[in-house]
Image 1 (cartoon, one colour):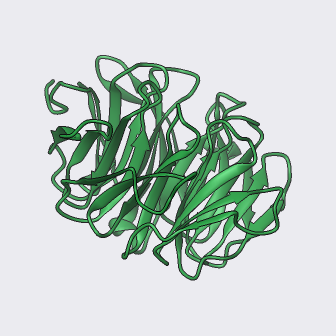
Image 2 (cartoon, helix red, strand yellow):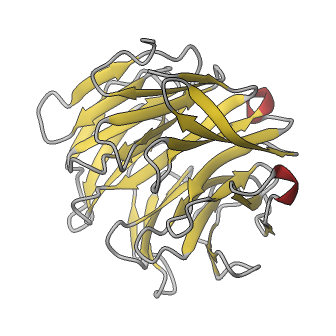
Length: 314
């Protein structure tokens, strides 16, 4: 399957929710420590071609597609800003909006797939912010975490509910109608880098940690995890539930691998891909094509492949 070489280190990859042959990639120079960034919009075919690219003065740590406009992308930038790009417009006309409220690096973004007009940003300033596309200022700031917030994820069924994963070793569940978080999950004893909701059971959430594990929780009874998935050799950077199968999820890790899991079976690790030669930090599963995976990493490569095939195969 096709491979794309980026000039900078890969940080995040997301399939378009509108077009099965489009994906966006966030990259940052010098491993994201210092330097520029770039957002790539890629077209899948026999080869991967670049439809558009947008340069930034700082690294791009994450991005997400709009759920209501097929050409809009929200990017999380190392200077703390969020930038909205319209991939149908030339680079000179982009970004169409820059939102700068976070006091430190913006590390994660997620678009609301139920309401389709709002998105979240997670930052190293310990906060999560709620935004809508048409407003120049944030709607609300969620301030409870005691350390960096690495990711925030909307519940796939409830338009007002989201989760946040933090370096304070907790995942918090929030309802935007409530003044504070509605639940605190002391999910790991080390930093939590990622969380995601099950797409078929709105009470099931997965957390991924520096402790090398992924844990699956039922928010109705969160005293003990539903499953603990061990198999990565280093910190688990991202976890993503399948849009097609309830118990399936993908993860990527600083051990350079992408893993596929089925948390409902005894031998939960059902696939391991070791195609990256540096930290694997971005992974996604296509909503439109079942079994289609994408990953990116610090080796400056973006891979797209069908589960069960070799990502490196031409």
